[in-house]
Length: 191
DNA sequence: AGAGCGATGGCCT
DNA sequence: GGCCATCGCTCTA
Image (cartoon, rainbow, N blue to C red; front, top):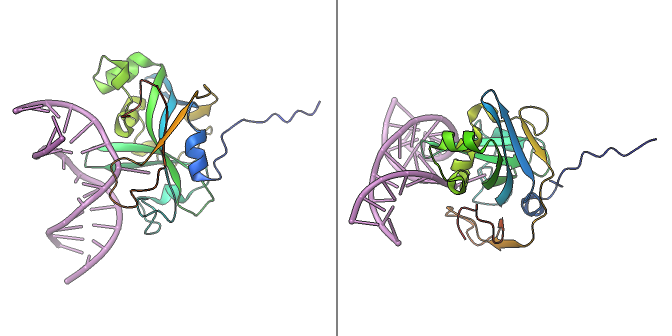
């Protein structure tokens, strides 16, 4: 029989909708050290006409992954020491993405805590740079496409209630309420 | 060629 | 709550 063997994945067409829809999905990274995974519990959307977005001033070598097709991983380095992980959304050649800000650890928790030099799983991935470190996602993973390499996205949990706020740590277009998190979850970066 | 700065986190008070 | 470490990328000259 002809089943529509749909690889279920969140709709990444609209970046803001995708930021909300990604909550609860399971992010997985397979590395030689082992497999780590967690539920996405906090996100932020960045769009092409958004002054806070890295893509606002056009494509550069740094942000080129952001102009790839939806599902591409965009990793950037900031503050001289931190990596942050995004899932590209929207149309190819239009720079839009969803920043992953926090995970609720699921598999490989010991490894995540080791990478983070922390004993408390609650602080293992409760911030964009912590998430990147706990999952060992860095420059080498920039440009990977979800579910075609070492990084995968799978269905996870269905959020009970979603909270929406303004975004964190930006100085431009600060009024857009494009941060989403699972209300009541203990693994988010801040209320 | 070089200054300025950033979608942060950790430690200090 | 505030400060600062630290460096690649971007923009300007």
